[in-house]
Length: 275
Ligand SMILES: [Mn+2]
Image (cartoon, rainbow, N blue to C red; front, side, top):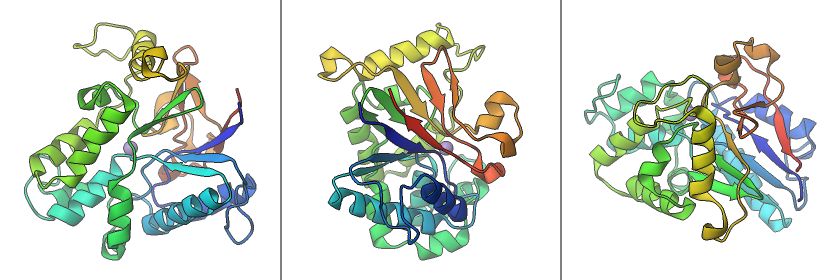
């Protein structure tokens, strides 16, 4: 298996993104793709909380084009902050049940940056609206959130992506709100997390999740591990954000959290998947 690279939630921290990409030699000094036929995956949550979401999105969009020309691949997943931003853009002050009282208010409550929304173009909207929520790369299952709600959108990767994509194409604000609420789930694979509706332990939940979305009946290799972001590692390990320089592997090695908590002050890291 060819190694591939994973970078967690950026939340508008463009300077740290540039540093990480250069340090790993994934780009050259001028930020052009330098990794040839390699695969680099971003876990979503490009914007909000930090100041330069649009810069992060623009760079990932460009690297995606450059990598493709070089025979490589940049995978960009959808996090919860992409639909938050798109909903603020699309529905503005229309009411929600969320903490901000409206789509704009909920986005702003969750760290939305007015300067990002002001600079959002039709090309950004198009790109953000079509990001996959879930992908399999080699024998790893990648999704933004450590959450089970994806099962409600489909029982194959294609079905999940199609249904979430349909929500983002629809003008039904109830379905948008439902998606945003669903995306607040986290910690589904952590020991001791009680989920009344799912009477299994954390390891069994991860095993079943992997079996639903991969394996022979899916004509795919069985995925052996879930890679996710969404919940900053310091919230799982009680470490200081500044100390987080590698992924957190847990649930009997079935789960890998790559969210270094950049918006909390973490330096970030590039996670290399090698076997
Ligand atoms: Mn998230």
